Image 1 (tube, rainbow, N blue to C red):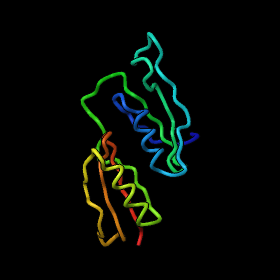
Image 2: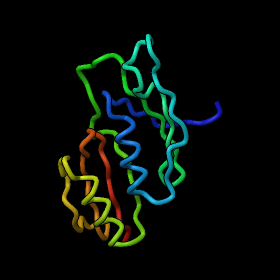
Image 3: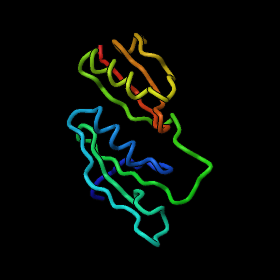
Image 4: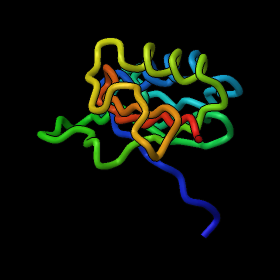
Amino acid sequence: MSKVTPFLMFQGNAEEAMNYYTSLIKDSEIINIVRYGANEPGEEGSVMQAAFSLKGQEFMCIDSNVKHEFTFTPSFSIFITCDTEEEIDNLYENLSKGGQALMPLGDYSFSKKFGWIVDQFGVSWQFNLPL
């Protein structure tokens, strides 16, 4: 086994999500994108497979060419440990736009500041500012 990589399956907005995430989180980048071409199973130009990194953590993603009855679930989330209050406030505010707060930013006794959201793409995020 060479490595373990989280894999996100989108329904047509993988590239938009990758661009959004990498624009908000410093030291992040889109590593590569392979697109569906003409006469392939997915919509031409959509993401067949891509890789991106957020602060050094690599993720893979696709635009599924099969429509599913399921989507992301909050039981799997991306957990971010922030260094400053400004950082946690900025990430929480931006990633929650068009999404839903599961736990508003606050002091939950196990953390100086903590929040949990589902973003506009359906991906769940937890933000932590340690004690």
